[in-house]
Amino acid sequence: MSTSVLVINCGSSSIKYALVSDRREDRIYGLAENLGSAEARIKGITFGGVPLELEIPFADHEKALETVLNRLSQYRPQAIGHRVVHGGTLTKAERLTPEIIERIRQATPLAPLHNPAHLIGIDATMRLFPDLPQVAVFDTAFHQTMPAHAYRYAVPKFLYTEHNVRRYGFHGTSHAYVSDRGSELAGNFRQGGWLTAHLGNGSSTCAIWNGQSIDTSMGLTPLEGVVMGTRSGDVDPSIHSFLANNLGWDLKQIDKMLNSESGLLGLSELSNDMRTLIEASEQGNQDATLAIEVFCYRLAKSLAALSCGLPRVDGLIFTGGIGENSAYIREKTLSYLPHFGFQLGKDKNNDLKRGTEGRIDTGTGPELWVIPTDEEGRIAQETRSVVDPIDAAPSNNTENAAENDALA
Ligand code: ADP
Image 1 (cartoon, rainbow, N blue to C red):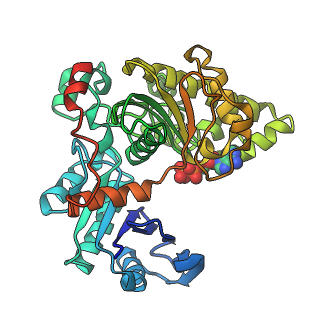
Image 2 (image 1 turned 90 degrees about the vertical axis):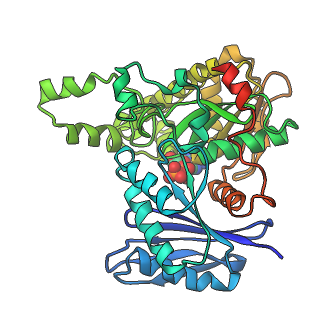
């Protein structure tokens, strides 16, 4: 009999859900949005690919979760897996207990937009389904194998020891999934050195050695690193004092600008959507062209920098909406990495069908892969490994620890 896990990702006014079976069956998934307002509704796909649209006026998180679970109860989920953005220094998925919920609460200052919403969802599902095992799967956990020289900032030590100021990294479930899958397809599961580029609205890169994260581009928050849809990525931290002293901006205004008005949107003054920018660039829009160039150049720079954490580079994997779908961005990024010996198969790159995984190098040099990410699948797998450790695949984070210590 197949068993399934209900994966829940709670935002401040929305809930994404997916019912993930342990067999390769169609997924039931959807989004409850506009929660708390008259426009609250659920949109999704039910079994057999049938669309679902349900008005749930003024429903809050609890009401929406109750509605979703009632509709799914016939499939009898074995457990609930919650995506939690920040797990502080927790190193793996954890069964939800009062102590773990408190640890998630303590990590709130590090993810003020995300963790409070996750806690609302956790609170509601614990009340609604007290008998169902529930697990938190953290975006940060995969990166807890980073050595200290990768996760410490060069700021006074007490900020780390007393205030947890360090690099954490995010998108962990995606980097873990695509590097596992890529190395498996390459015939060397969790072996060797891989670079991964998760390119969506939020983007990050990761260096992985023998299945473990060695370094990643995001830091204390998901603002650090490469250029994103509306996030700046790396800037000189003195930009804060420059803007305060010269333009009279306060911290809130600077934070908003860096998180919501920068990146592709800020550079192009047109859109945060890569498709729109590629089209505009083709029609001669210079700002769109520059935004794409900055995106690819900074991305290449990040991948080259992260390669310092790897004894050797066996392959590079592209994923996320942009990484999976844009042959143009993949080719342009690789053009800035000439010294790695990557040999892009241009036809393979251009001909790869949307949403499929495939190898896009010519067969010489390090391997190049496109792997559609599956964060829900990974969260379900990790949830199973906590609830039913004998049946589930081994978790990533403790194997090869000695080897990584040696790297540190
Ligand atoms: P999120 O981080 O919100 O999950 P996605 O992973 O879905 O985002 O990625 C969204 C991005 O993917 C958008 O910038 C979108 O323009 C881009 N994208 C999707 N399809 C294509 C395409 N064919 N070419 C270029 N960019 C694409």
